[in-house]
Image 1 (cartoon, rainbow, N blue to C red):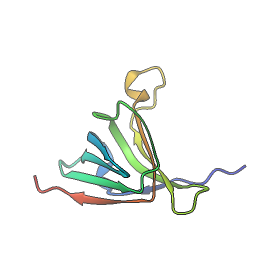
Image 2: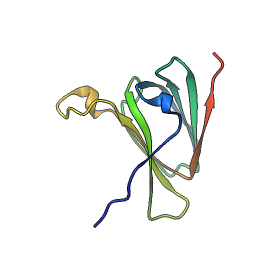
Image 3: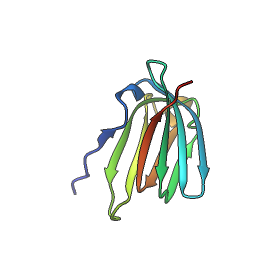
Image 4: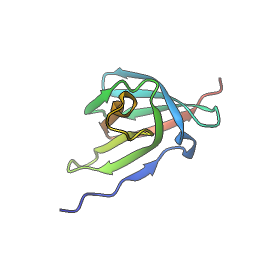
Length: 109
């Protein structure tokens, strides 16, 4: 079985960025990101079906990855944790979202 390839999406500035807040209201999830250059972003996911997370606030992220799923119009998104050492607390942090799509807005603050 061949697994679908991940696509890196969103701003390249997410590389080495940090998750600062995660909020869910109904079928919308927002994630506040401090990018590597200091630019702040709000990533808004729509039509959220499922969220799998463990201590995402403060997590240093490598990128935002997207995969197709077996459900038409629903994608798997993951803020890829920069740390990949299974025995550390930092490595266990994760944020995975199954949703219909997302938008990215830069904050002016």
